[in-house]
Image (cartoon, rainbow over all chains, first blue to last red):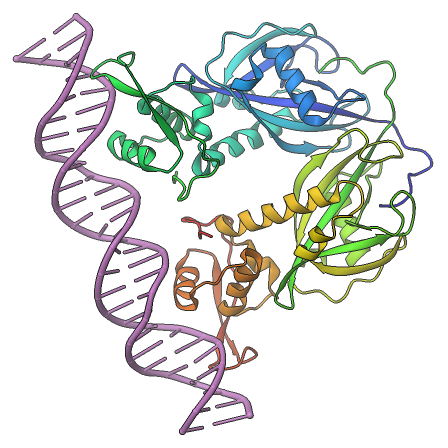
Length: 230
Length: 230
DNA sequence: ATAATAGTGTCTGTCAGACAATATCTA
DNA sequence: TAGATATTGTCTGACAGACACTATTAT
């Protein structure tokens, strides 16, 4: 790395969040309507500027807290990618580090102070709109693809469920996120036998109707061997 | 995203490269010895400042060209992650976007203008040293892990081979990167049957000794279904 | 009883790893 | 010839998808 150039053009660093959940049988993303220029009135990913003494993960957690007021320990946060195309922000050179947040069905978020409005969108509708602010459509596409891929080889689907869940609820996460139907019986067998994916509890529930289903908690595994295939 | 804060503390954005190859039966990384403060004389990943009109991928390609003088079309470049811990650069707040570059066995790189020296290190030795500049040990660990993981579910191992390669050469890439032994016969069957992984040519070679081996080119697939497992 | 969902058992084809056998080069 | 590596074939056990069947609740 060479010496610091004599004069930097000023660069701003932001953190943007792709907050994903499964609600009402849909794969959904949290968008805010912008209350300020640029892109006033357009829908955008929540985000904000990196503060001077803050690391990226801290900033992402803080933004998540500010936008969703959700307990941070219930949400899986991971860095997605960084976007820096010249001109992506008309105000100045802006580099944004995008994070994905996988959350269970949340209470409807309250609008942040700088957002005119905030609500859940189905991912398909959000991308169909075609007029997200900045390059947020691309970031959203990348985040959705990352989430879909991660369901294959990690037990992250559980991040979309409440802390105790049934195998059916877990299966519906896969079906909604991937847009495919899965055989309930084979899925049950695969998931309960995969080492460390889910942990049996002693409770059952009838909240999904029919015969009582056993409740499970997320296991301690971080990767699935072998992976579930789409 | 809120309004631009009235005063930003200045932030510098750099791009660092984890250039990986397989040479002499070892998984190796290109390091440069720093010729300037900070960390003078310490080994570091090659990299440099993002220029005002440049996107990240362009900057990564340019740095690669400057440091290795390798034809860019022979190298797989992909964004790894972004690092921004306060204090990671003692000069000023610096955000670095790391890329991994997977390259075939290269001619020994010439030192860049700002590097006192440049050479290949075995990945294990580089991490064992324990005194890489900045947070480059962490970036290297992450890059190595990304490369290892990607071999499982993409045909990227071919990026470590010359343009025409034998199945044995491809297998040795896996063995060196993963540090495991693979059955030559099962590997041959798996790879040649996987759709789009490798493309047969009409040529053979005896450069590895023994019976002439058919030469293959990289196929057009981008993911492997099902993946190869470590 | 009927409907709904949970969970188990079984069948069958495919694919993994283990490894025998054969092919074709160099020395 | 022996030695090295390539490539094909075969066996076997595990696991995938398909789906019959049983279990347990609500109405």
